[in-house]
Image 1 (tube, one colour):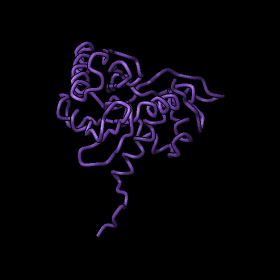
Image 2 (cartoon, helix red, strand yellow):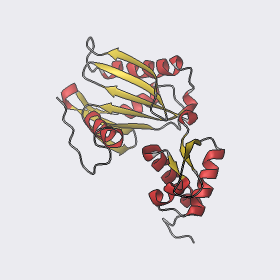
Image 3 (cartoon, helix red, strand yellow):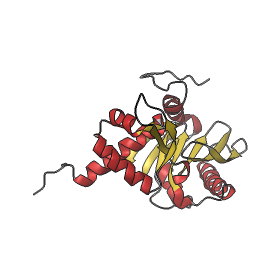
Image 4 (cartoon, helix red, strand yellow):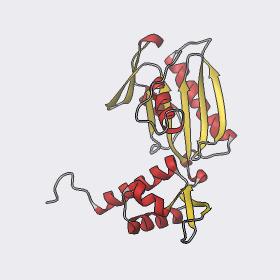
Length: 225
């Protein structure tokens, strides 16, 4: 009987692919030679993973750089059009929905004001539903291309329950709102598209660490005024 928790060959392959994609996404473009030290994988593993991902259209060449006395090195990057992302901010005055490709180029944006109705849960869910449909329509995109939707909301987020993310937002009048379930029931999305719901200040801080002023730092402070 196999040991519980033992990693299979499939698990290792998926892990290797994830490491390569992650490094190229955050640090790319990179050459195959640079990917080895960046991921800790052997040159053979890098070659296999890159060949698979290029064949699937997830990676593409991004130019050539000269090396010290050797052959020029081909740079690789994540193919911008191989997937789409949606970011949603439930802000103080509006619900903003934005559609991006994998280079984080904005493809479409829409905003719905909250001033008239405040943080009425049903109204916010309706704004999200309408906003997602609008950005996909404006970019002539299909929901099946979505890799995920990230949503920043005010309040404390309780994860891991049977209804998904629960929002406790005292300042906006939300008490144990099953926000993820409400969105799943209302927004027309393929069931495999994941929803990532977290506190808006926390998501802003994470974005700064990945792509903004905190990039490359181990710690950073973000102040919201």
